[in-house]
Length: 227
Image 1 (cartoon, rainbow, N blue to C red):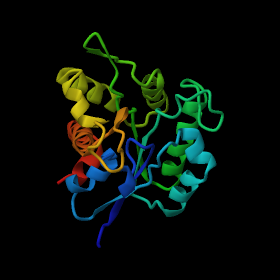
Image 2: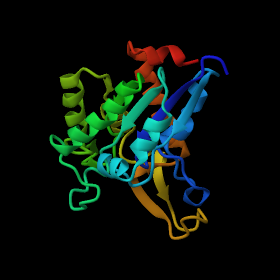
Image 3: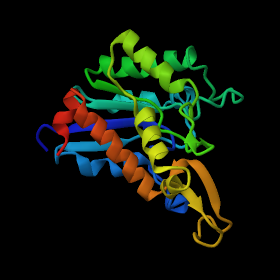
Image 4: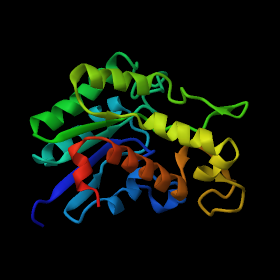
């Protein structure tokens, strides 16, 4: 197709394409394609369980580097697994190696004349006394914003957007957007599941919509690729 543009998504399980055996768990990246024009292809490279560190060390960023073309986009969203500092394979410190790793993603985009876009981590569903925790992914969202300002790359504060949405919806109603299943409802989760990080299909679609709205409200060139 003429003027084909590819949007790469580098991230963790909150964005990733899910295997049928994980259904109804859904990543927001799965709901992304419908918002873009016909000449735009979504290349969702997000992988379950990855942090900025493990995504790089396992060679996934190098694979993006091989295929990304001038004029393409690289959307970067991590933080949930970077939080696991007890795990030497994945854990990073927000104002230290997390930012260093983000710089490697940005470098790949710049070296290939592609456009980088940082997204702060989507919110976890974490309530106390009916109030949502504004630090649901610790310091990682703020560390990303600080890093983006420092090196002058675009960032959208998706943690804030999703956190405010879930906070407004409330403790009980917000369960409808996450992987909350009673026993016997799903063959994949016969004993049920309570997961306040990963989304169901409804949640993934809502988060994708919130990200698209944030792009619409920005002055980013990516806005011109939306339908």
